[in-house]
Image (cartoon, rainbow, N blue to C red; front, side, top):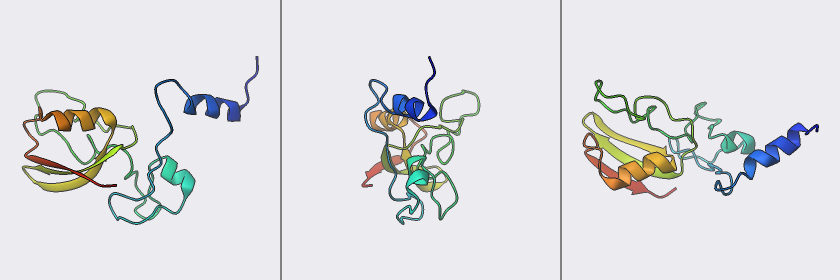
Length: 121
């Protein structure tokens, strides 16, 4: 049975348990509206020329513990769902986190995060 590529795209967007695809309309780094709708769907800011709408775990927020390998050591490829301002030992960083990393920060079980404040998107 042949399936067109547009049909495959529709199938991917409607997998059970995923809900509607996330659209990052405002860049968390520069704060400006993302002009290109397709780039925004992928989490890419056309002004910053980076994937600023993707989860910042492993990209902007990295666990300083080099002896234990966690999901905070490698860049997460999921789209950001929640905006955060996170203070580590080195300073403050604004980023977005996917649902999984957002839940980890909300639980408060990350001893290397000094302060984390959720932001409006």
